[in-house]
Amino acid sequence: MVKINKQALENYQTKYGSDSILNVNKGIEKEGLRVQVDSGKLASSDHDTKFGSKLLHKWITTDFAEGLLEFITPVSKSNRETLSTLGNLQHYVLEQDSNEIIWPSSMPCILPEDKDIKLAYYGESNSGRLKTLYRSGLGLRYGRSMQAIAGLHYNFSMTEEFWKNWHELSGSDLSLQLFINEEYLNLCRNFRSYSNVLLYLFGNSVSVHESFLNGKKHNLEVIHDDEIHGKTYGTKEGTCLRMGGLGYTGASQNGIRICYNGLDSYCDSLEEALQMNFADFDKIGLRNEKGELQQISTHILQIENEFYSIIRPKRIAPPGKSALASLRSKGIEYIEVRLLDLNPFAKNGITKTQADFLDAFLLTCLFMQADKCNREIYNEIEDNNQLIVKQGRSAGLEISLNGSKINYQEYLAKFFNQMTEVIHAISDGERKEELLFAIEEQRKLIDPANSLSQKVFDLVSQKGHIQAMKELALEHRKELASTDVNQIFQEELALEKNSSIQRQVEFEKLDDVDFEEYVAAYVASSFSK
Image 1 (spheres, rainbow, N blue to C red):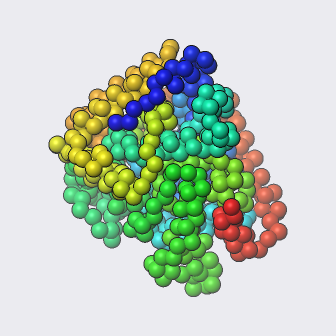
Image 2 (image 1 turned 45 degrees about the vertical axis):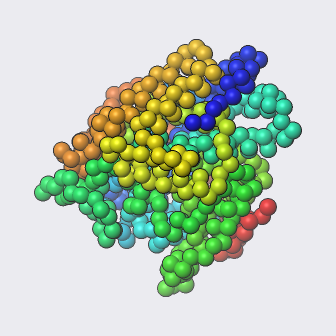
């Protein structure tokens, strides 16, 4: 394991205190399918008439499909506050239709045929049409059912105060933003190296309904069968189907190697993929039989977001400008963690203890010195992750560490010790105790018998994927209704529904550029250095 510079952290705490380290900025983006409560089937009702404009609503939108909700919490320094907001958002949605539930699993409900999964429609503005066009391309490339897989994204950034202090203490000759870029990329490299830990601890997408597998190659076993809902397939040793061959690791992206050694090399490697031809996507065609665009491009990536990375350095882009161009020109603003399964036992898809653990994990990744990435390291990370995805609960599992084999439970124990060392070095007081508690709670899962993936597997083996998740969804709906609901926020959500729809009407009047010209300009903006 990599050593930390404890002296630097102790110097920081002596000079500046620990508050600016621990008061990190967080936000959550939680996806969840809207599902018919009686049948367990994907809801087909329109989103906007219930919740507001999915294009412009501040907190409630959709991901790929009309029935795939996405909840976006405001930035907060408190995990308790973030989860309370997320609960209020979900409560509001559930109040709009008693016949629908929010699916608690990353792996989908009973799905219709691929063509009947409705793409999210964002209106007739150029930016709205671009969003739908991108989703059209995803559906043609990977199948719409794969895009119905849900996840939870965890956004993380250090405060401006911390960066100024850490920059000063380091004595770096780099400008503040260049220094921030380097530090965040160090975090990303460490995160990738230890991402198998999160796949093991948080991964639990171990079962699927037969409707998801229609036409897909797989080696899953039938683990439950009933007359009402049909077959459930599962993996007895795996942890995270979502991040395996049935999920977000398609063959088309196997050759992409994104470099996290510097911001320019990161952007350059993504740009290369954006311009790389791929025969299968070329065969699909840029246009449909009517001559209309059906993909943004026929390259390996239509836009940078199509690359299914487990972590992304991010910057919010202004309207009409690509996120990649903004990232290159302005630098890294925050980090987005993208490999997390929804926790089906938690009403918010994640518990406070899990969120606290993520904070401790990300702080550890920030303060350990990461090696520069090369092809050997990259391949070892990918191989380890796929081992955990496919065999994470198998007895005696070994992974690779710098070319040598190590028992996985031993590896996990060492990493937990490293995390504890970091938290002791950077913090004191109540927040320190919360982070240490979170580490110890997750340490209990080192034994595969106690893992979250085993808990889900046992449940779905007994009840089936659909029945088990329906029951959990109903429990969550009841709990969300019984917890303290912020009535002022509920009223604000009702106002935002109508306001967002009206803003979209006005927004659509502003376009003065032909849509295809708009698409071409957007694509070109990704390549402007």
